[in-house]
Length: 399
Ligand code: ADP
Image 1 (cartoon, rainbow, N blue to C red):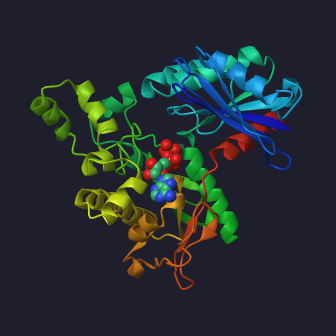
Image 2 (image 1 turned 135 degrees about the horizontal axis):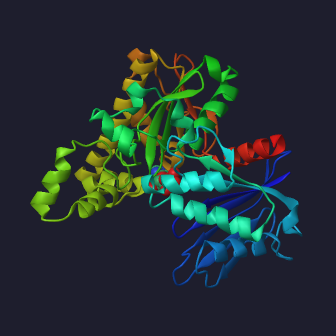
Image 3 (image 1 turned 90 degrees about the vertical axis):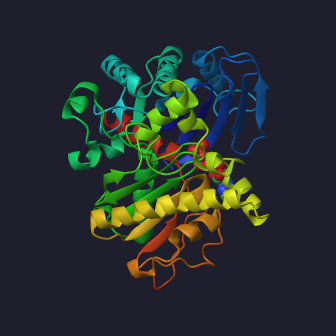
């Protein structure tokens, strides 16, 4: 069965076409600058030459139209007819408390997700625009929603509630939701397979370290804690996001800078994190290069990043009363051997020992821990699209 996976951002769209009997990637691509001048689609059918088309695309509907043209292109395409695609899986960021699992989208689901849009104003509207475009352009083909928040719905109230008046939760749904759920779930499934142990018998700490970064504690296959919160701003220090912060700083900053709270939110989301500390870049490659050249603030930014990850690892070991494996993924988790080494340093008393030689690796599923490390350390490259395709395939087959 062929499944199309779509991940719509506000002005971009990533897609993959997968054949699910063998889980084979057939084509993939990226549309950028949707609704802006210079809209462009970069398409690649596996085994064929890449295809780039710059053409106006005023909205997601137009973008998905071009995706479909590219997939069925006589020369560059992967299939002859759109009707070969049996289902579309959509990444949807926020499902609030409504859905703890993926679901086939109908009008009721769309209404529920529209209600969640105020919780993710930047993400849910484009995600839903993608769903509507597919409904229009591929009538009768089921659309499945796979939610970033769903995997974390297993957290208990003591983990997800903030200590603010309870009515704020009841009235405004203010609680920890957590994100990157699809990625954390994928790491858990793959780690269990690699270890050849049932996921229900494992305690895992999964670290998704990219521009956006989060850590999760996964006990017996269920997310029990995660570092992102009501929004993806909480938790780890990120490329440009501050992560955990004393909330009084927000009002103080507004006062000191003489700006509104919107501007402060902007600073905390876009001008903070390792970019804010270093004053150089949000990219860890730039920071490591600068550190090697003696830049102290770049070094400090990297140290602060690692410190916060270690802080969460420690907390999650306490929360689960131990850990069997720590898993790394995301642009930094997969590629940055230096950062993995700093994060895992000096934790021998907790049974965590990285093998520095094995750690000299990038983007490959592999074991990084020393043979005598009680806790396994693993690298598992992210593949959120495959999880979305699997869940779409399963749900549509069952329906
Ligand atoms: P996103 O959250 O945008 O999906 P990614 O998971 O793609 O982010 O991660 C992007 C980040 O990964 C870059 O900003 C960079 O800091 C880091 N990164 C990528 N490759 C390397 C590398 N070789 N060494 C160190 N850091 C890297």
